[in-house]
Length: 378
Image 1 (cartoon, rainbow, N blue to C red):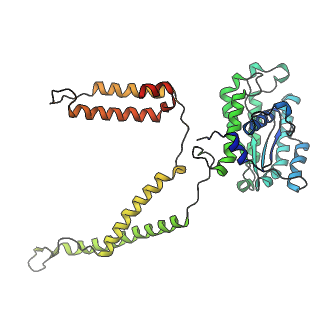
Image 2: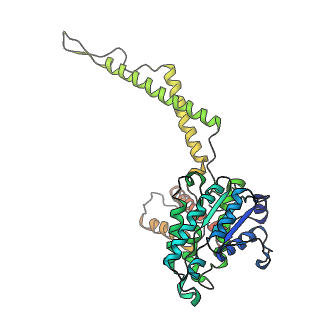
Image 3: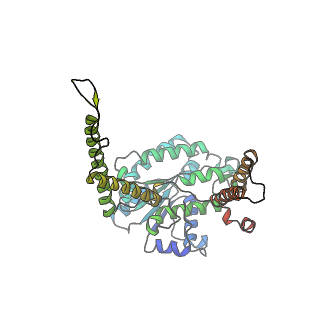
C-alpha cells in the first residue's frame, strides 16, 4: 500500500537531506512534482537547483565522479535518467545507442559506489505517444526507448558489486506511462497527474522506511526478530522436537507390549495395561507445543509485512456485483421451514447471516468511503 504524504510529513522525512535530480526534461518534471509534495506553492519557473544533463556523457560522469571523490557534498538521494535527448539529436542512429551503452558502462561503477551510502535511482524512460509527437521528435520511437532501457538495465545489473550496492531501477514510471501517455500534451511528457503519482511513489520508496506509516506497507523492510522472539522460537521448536521423540519412543514400546503371543498355547494374551503411560514430561511438552502453535498464529496475524496489501479503490462494480451474486444465490437456494409465523427464529438467523455478508462486502470493496452509500447503509 502507498501512503499519501502530507507536506509536513515530507518535510520531516527529508529534513537535512540532500536530494539531487539529474537528467533530461522528463526528470526535471519529476523533480517539480517532487518539490510540490514538500511545498505546493513553489512555481516551476523558480526552481534553480535541477541539474540539467540531458545526455549520459562525460559531463554527467564528471558530476557524478565529483560526489564519489568528496570534492562536493554527497547527496542522500540521487535520481538520474536520460535517453530521449540522445535519440533526438542523433536521429535515432545505432551508433548513438552503442555510445550510450559505453557511457552507461563508464558511470555504472560510480553509481554503485554512491549507492553504498546513498539511495540511487535510475529512472527508466517512459514510452511516447508517437502519433502526437512533433516533427522534430518523430525519431523518438517506443522501439528505440525499449532498446535504451534494456541497455541501461542490463549494464546496471551486470556488475557483481551492484548485488550489494543496489542501484535501484525505478520502473514504475514506465508502467504508469503505458496507461496515461495518451493524455500527454506533446506525446513525450507525462500528464501532471501521472507525474504526481510517480513523485509520491518515489517519496514512499525513500520515506516509508524512515517514517513507517501504518498505511504505507510498500518499500518497508521487514522488521528484524527481537531477542525475545528468537528465544521463544527456539524454545517452542525444541519443545516440539522433544515431544515428538518422546511420543515415538512411548508408542513403539506400547506396540511391542500390545500383543504378546504365548509360544506354548499359541494364544494371544492382552497386556495388563491397554493404554500407553503418559509421563508428566510428555504432557508438559504437549502443552508447550499447543502454546507454540497459538503463538505462531498470533505472530502471523500481527506480521502484516509478510503478506501483500493494496490500497482500496472503490468502483460500483466491485460493490454491486458481489451483492447481486449473493442475492441470486439466495433466490436459488431456499428451504422450507416448519414455522408459520413471520420473523421466526430460522428466518431471523438467516437474515443475520445475509447482513454479515453485506457488511463484509461493504468494507472490503471500500464502499464505506462513499457518502451516498453511507447514507443508504445507515
